[in-house]
Amino acid sequence: MTSNTHAVPPGSQASAPPGPWREFWTTFSANRGAVIGLVTIVVLLLVALFAPWIAPHAPNETNAAAFLKPPAWQEGGSWTYLLGTDAIGRDILSRLMHGARLSLSIGVAVVALSVVVGVVLGLVAGFFRGALEIAIMRMMDIILTMPSLLMAIVIVAILGPGLVNAMLAVAIVVLPHYVRITRATVIAEVSRDYVTAARVSGASTLRLMFREVLPNCSAPLIVQASLGVSTAILDAAALGFIGLGAQPPSPEWGTMLADAREFVLRAWWVVTFPGLAILAAVLAFNLLGDGLRDALDPKLKR
Image 1: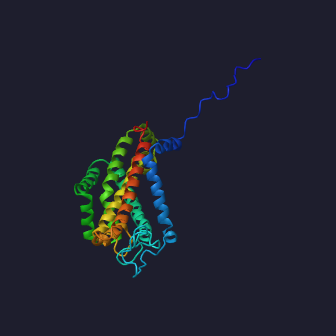
Image 2: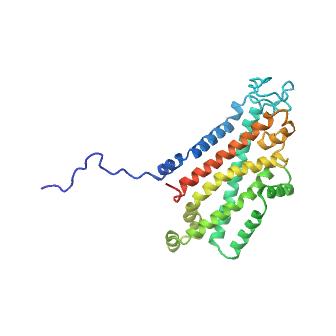
Image 3: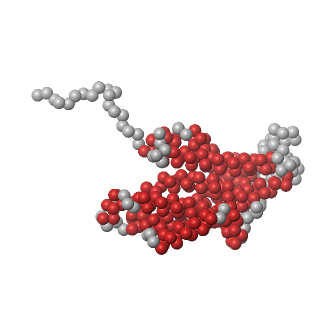
């Protein structure tokens, strides 16, 4: 009795299709800018996490003998203060390291608050159409009519200057983006077969919102959140620069720029290095967001 099964020669078997994570990483890693942004963010996070141990000085430690000392490679500089000192003898490198902890915390906290509130409002607007949807979306349109920084300044002026109020103001400013993205995705998803099947099987509205529809809205929200961190860092630095955000002697990057602006012509380093830190962080999150968009959006995959 002969067998109908035939041995398959080695190497002739079709390779298994890549998993979703492998496919995501392949697409993401093909974008060099996104990889650079990811590496920069990881470095900033490590610096922020270990700032108390790797910073050469305390962030608010002053030295009366080292006012406006230039960087180490410039004439008159010292390797004790690698990036120089500010007007009251504080080490700029140490303040930048501790400022990374503060600025990144602001960005993450603002985005987390905006995403949570925005997702809830977007789900409500997408599921419960009618007067409730109109009220939510018109409120978001009102927020979007004003320039973001001006709106944040108005909110902080009402609440009072301070880091917490500045974070709350920036969170309100960026909130409409998450509400609109969530609502648009929900409207597109509720008409699909899996939602209809879940509804017929007796799933409650909360289950439909958070267990069925929300996971399919995650891709655009992740992209917007990564881009939102850069916006939050930039707006928080702007508020700190005009005195409405973090207050001195806090080593927040915007506050460092505000303290150094009167010395810009005779001590370039006190303005340049905090500005470069803001630039690096904002650019890194923007590059990461672009890479995530290309990797998570199937229409953009090549």
